[in-house]
Length: 385
Image (cartoon, rainbow, N blue to C red; front, side):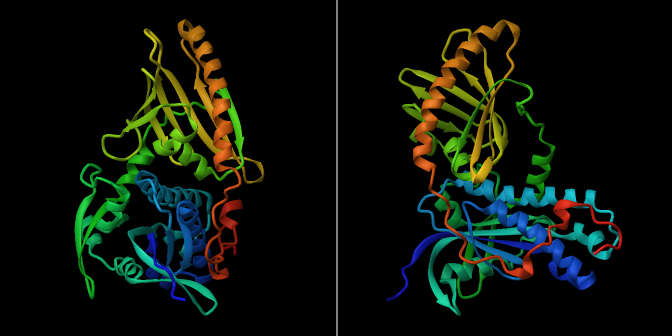
């Protein structure tokens, strides 16, 4: 029986500077560093992506989801890169090692290529392999001239097919138009996100988080589902609408990407609540300012955070900021009503997402790419192995 073609998004996370790094430093220590950084990136991509395989200095991932929110997918790509940058900073600050590998780790970086097309799954040598024209294309896109345009900085390169499948507006998002001539395929239209610029913007952004310690009130729920799933049902209007008591939820993001400045219009009959995004940290938390359809009502600021709970569950915390003294009575009444509605709504959310664990990766992580975990647990002392 011939394998069935499936539509899929493909992505490759490729380490820049890998060859020069390995050639110039201690191999065993260098491999531990590479594995640590690759682990951070792959974890950042899952979900929506699942691992197909490691390919030397790259990780090949894919998703066969019939529909995927374009903002969510781009958040996964950029979020994975941000995890790498934070991890790099943490390791460099924690390590006192002066070996060549630790000194040179700052030369490492990542680039990503993303494409949408068709594939087939084939069993080869006891392993599942992805095959097809589009699988070839996403790999060929790794060899490109984007670095010449960006001056060697990190980037995410999206094929026009991926952009169209996501329903994204590349011009509104400020993506850079690019073209590559691929042998046996021809001219390919592409769009580039400068990840170095995106990282600087994210790292320099002032955070507006209502912490648990500073909150006026905190509503807490435990949900037996992965964090990314809970995040999706909290933030994507089509998913949010399935469990929240609203006639409609209209998202106005301006640039076609969810983030700071996005306004959600949550309609309840003739009344509309308007939420404006003040802070956006996928998939950890977001903070909104809520305008209720009540004359003279104060704006209510709330952080919605998703955290790791016990035994693989997700803890959802809804933290309401302390009101001004003159607004305390109103906020107290509004909080009580919100808590009652949310408790009922979470019961519906649980029925949709609990027990639906993501599929296992197509292959186990190769031993050669496993980190010892040393960087995660303690600083590396000079000369230590």
